[in-house]
Image (cartoon, rainbow, N blue to C red; front, side):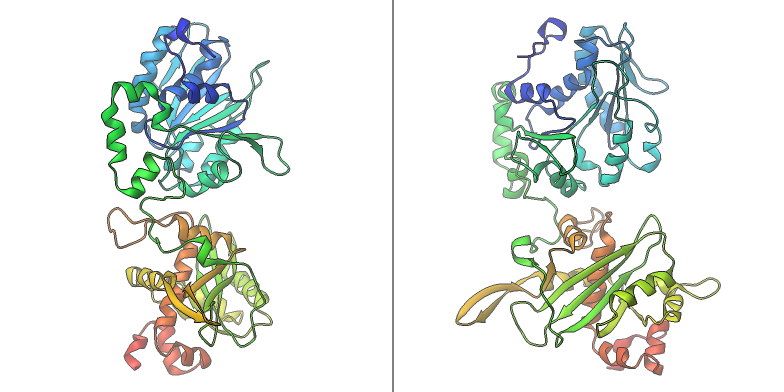
Length: 461
């Protein structure tokens, strides 16, 4: 056992001991409330300072916002001051030891904040509540500052967290899904080792003995919250918007789509950093076990409208596309042709999508709902809308969608909402009577008026 009692009067419990002794370069610790994550992180990031006393040691502790680190700093100061460290709050909060070791604290809220850490050397980085970080790219950029020029001191990064939050899906995908808990693993082709070490409230015997009421509180929570906070269940995403969606029922292996199936496209525009996204959807002419399926997805960044249009047409070269609905913002123009007109110049006909958000999400709820279906004497529960398993970002966009805190009926913005918007445009297009006839004659007066948004299409029917 690693014993810190002689330097800071602190001893690890078994799960904390496993975390502190892990050789992994990337670590995730926790997965439930009350598992002793905070103390373990405080000790882990300071080990080279308080045990080996490296003079050139530099550690970094981050959370989504600087204010949310206040409690961590209070507890860290309580432990570190017993080892001789002092807290200096200006200009950048950090602990410093008499022999020169330092641990800095900051936030990881956005791309501007990451510039504070790039180009610097940190041998230990600790991120508190990793799932509050929505964008995996912030985490990946941070790895660029994880390095060591100190002899016999390797560079490592560790994070603590609970299931849930805007970063739930990418954290689960990076740490939880690849291997069983407590197992060291590597990604294919990478020499770098990762490990996920779960810790439940029952692994924190000190808390259970001192405050048994907290355990009872966790046991009394609603089922989903209890499974996430008490049991550390990563399959439960509290606040998930599309609760009907599950990979087991909505994701299918690719197959050759019959020529008799109708095909559609939906586009959400972006240039940079937001991408332009296009989805292809096929629809069966009769009610089968697969009725609508997203069979292709593509996205572009830093690509002008004309080139996007050429790519879309090339990918659809041998397909009969009934119609393509697109982001209404593409028709905006202060001077010169709009983005929609630039695509039209390349031969890509577009219909302006209905941008009603809540109504669109309702259409998706209806599409994901499981309905009774009978085939060959057997009954099945099937959704109206499915997705090929190679459309990975479309699948992720549905899985990570959460309720907006200010409007519970809406979906909160996230890094993959462009794929979700395409699904919404498509379902709203299918819900509007008459779109098929307009797509069949895109040069008709009715179609021109619709594209110019001068009249409501539904007013004609």
